[in-house]
Image (cartoon, rainbow, N blue to C red; front, side, top):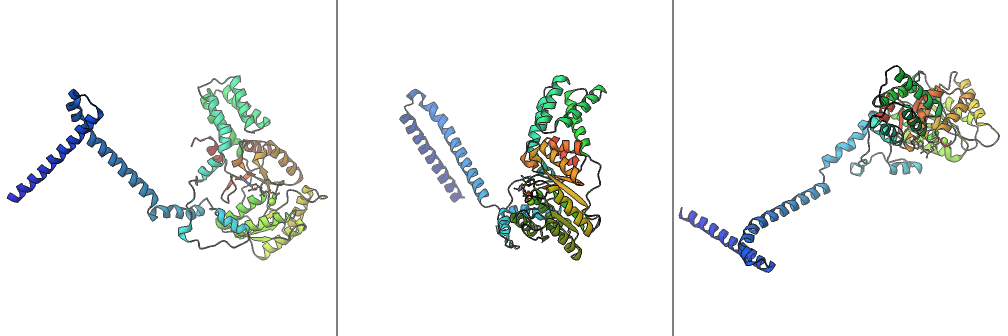
Amino acid sequence: MDGENTGKKLISDLLIDWFSRYQDLLSDLIVTLGVPEAQRPEVLKTLTIIVPVVVLFFVFGLLLLVLKKTGKKAPPPEEITPSVEEEPGEAAGEDVGGPSEAEAEVLSQGLEPSVAVPETEVEVPPAEPVSIMGRMRAGLAKTQAAFVGRLDELVRGGRGLDDRLWEDLEEVLITADVGMKTTLELRESLEKRQREGKLTDSAGLRAALREEIKERLNISAEKLDFAACSPFVLMVIGVNGVGKTTTIGKLAHSLVHQEKKKVILGACDTFRAAAVEQLGVWAERAGADIISHGEGADPAGVAFDTIKAAIARQADVVILDTAGRLHTKVNLMEEVKKIRRVVDRELPGAPHETLLVLDATLGQNSLIQARLFQEAVEVSGLALTKLDGTARGGMIVAIGNELNLPVRFVGIGEKVEDLRPFDPEIFVEALFEIA
Ligand SMILES: Nc1nc2c(ncn2[C@@H]2O[C@H](COP(=O)(O)OP(=O)(O)OP(=O)(O)O)[C@@H](O)[C@H]2O)c(=O)[nH]1
Ligand SMILES: [Mg+2]
């Protein structure tokens, strides 16, 4: 009992001693700072309370900072693993998961990519939108801003539906490359809604335009069904540089990996050696076979051999790449017709799909190209590439409205997963919905 009291006394003596030293220190400080004598007791009282509070805050802040930093430097391994494992799940769904930059480089050198990548070396992909809608939105960002973004500015503030507004709307549509014909038709339909009392104010304009656009994109055409026959032959045509080979590569990858199809590519673009090589890289990346005869060979001859090989190897899908330009003499359209004839002779009914690739960045010029091809050959569907690189995505509405051809795919980037089956519903939602 006695020992306990002595202990308590010692502690209280120690505390009193510290406190008086602390007060001495503060008094010295007050004198050094030149505080007038009359105010010193008051200042001493205030400082006695404030100084410990400030010191405590400082120590606490420092502690938080250290904790935050150490947390960033060493994340627990379980934090990384799930996001890496999400990729294959994604591939099984919509996203086929493209090869990394390094893998692409290895492929372009014609070497086998390493299959067993140690888990520690797997890079966590940068924070990109990975959902279908997220990617579509990102791909359409430029068109979104130039088209719907400007439309929203137009209707902000509840303007009346007068001639001025209709003229401003026309300007927005034409700038987004919807084209004069389709723009005037859209204005006409919207004004009709107004006359019928279905559209009364600018707030309803957005929804009405969205409906009108969706209607024009809903082309009634037979769906592209790769299982309709075996082998299903898809011939890809278009002028040079529009993205034919890239589209074929992405499509082959998706058919092999998502739909588990056996795919053979035919390198009928014999215009230059690099074209054959480029298709070869894509074939390897996709896990598809390729038939090629090299630069300068007869494109129809390559098509013939590809069909023969597909039948012999029991392939599910044949995709023929064709040239966007030719060596002198032969006309591009004539060459396309010749390939079609040879393919049809070898496999009656083929090609089952003639896919015309159009470059969205070319805007209304693509429409002119499409008409020329339509006049020459039986085009059955379209792929619209490079939508990610343009604010002129409005041309897709003109395509739907004026060509009456179904858009089968849209290209929204250069990566393997950036080819999407075209769905008007998703497209319009990505364009109109505010993220
Ligand atoms: N940003 C973007 N680039 C694309 C897209 N599709 C293709 N490209 C790029 O467009 C360029 C031309 O693509 P290719 O596939 O070689 O075009 P092509 O029609 O086969 O050209 P030719 O063989 O010369 O007739 C390449 O740099 C592609 O990466 C797309 O959807 N978005
Ligand atoms: Mg090509």
